[in-house]
Amino acid sequence: MITISEASETIRMISEANLDVRTITMGINLLDCADSDCAAFCRKIYDKIARRAERLSRVGEDISKEYGVPVINKRVSVTPIAIAAAGCRNCDYVEVARALDGAAEAVGVNFIGGFSALLQKGITPEDRALLHSIPSALAATERVCSSLNLGSTRSGINVDAVNISARAIKDIASMTSDRDSIGCAKFVVFCNAVEDNPFMAGAFHGVGEGESAINVGVSGPGVVKRAIEAARGADFETLCETVKRTAFKITRVGQLVAQEASRRLGVPFGVIDLSLAPTPAIGDSIAEILREMGLEQPGAPGSTAAIAILNDNVKKGGVMASSYVGGLSGAFIPVSEDRGMIEAVRAGALTMEKLEAMTCVCSVGIDMAAIPGDTPADTISGIILDEMAIGMVNGKTTAVRVIPVAGKTVGDTARFGGLLGEAPVMAVNGFGCSAFVGRGGRIPAPIHSFRN
Image (tube, rainbow, N blue to C red; front, side, top):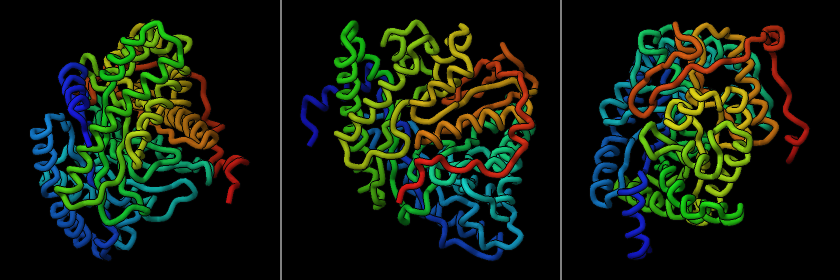
């Protein structure tokens, strides 16, 4: 039951602090669309998505109007295509991507996730075909997002897949060079990927999920910042309690929207993902939270501890408010999507190395970071391996979404528009790692993975 005081406080959070439901994402199982003929498979997945998600966008808009809660995005995630299309003979994965793109347009969603493969331990022929099609598929579509799971605490890291992914990133950048290599913004690689993530570009409908599910991603950096302002100068215990209580209130709003969407669509409720996902808008920034916590700039000494405090207490508050908190709940630190992070990079406070350190305790990893277009694929492999190692050893989800912006170098700016924002091109370490990443094979799982 939502009380009158909670309702009044929610209205203030929406009107004064940019509280919103960032996305309602419908997960859809495509395994029953399997067909040996690629054209028939494409028809089946188009028809199923169009049928299942036909009312998704309208329901999201109706809930937003009725409850006064902004619902920013409506999205779809599907079974990893490398699995769903495994029965196709001579499958044309670019045509599959076009079918997904067409279905997303038909139902009125801005992104569809699941052009994906799970490669943490090996690569099947279907996986390999999808891998090599990713650059062409992302260049040929507007709404399709692709993700790969390259490692896990249980399985180790598939270095062969890492190297293929790095070359794919370079190819995507080249094929979308006329738009500041924006195709790379639709491609992310993971260690320990989760099956119920509602956020793009990494969303897919996991094989452990049901026929369909509604997963809601709630965001509210501005609300958290406003709350911390009231605790200015207080000790860390008070600061943590403030973040936790605020996260509880934000999650309650998400729970309401999720339950309504589930009821109206007749689709089971999956999870609330309480991730403080920023936007380029003023007042919607993780960086501003870090400054309010006492840092001069994100990247200053203490930044990793500040993100750890934020991430942990967001999760604690979320689990008090809902029994089904999942996805990637915590704090995102995407560079291009956060005005304050952009300012920190331009000021020289936030470097790629410090960003990597902060990912040890944040919600995901190196996200929406622009790097020089001439960065070698081997260097990108090294960046990915470092991030995968953090996830593997610490048993957490980590990810890399970097954009080697064709034709641009350190100091230039890549402009993507909309929620993707813009990014100053960041320097990367110029020393080589080709002999290291060139070893290939698989990095074994850590000793603490052996638990039955």
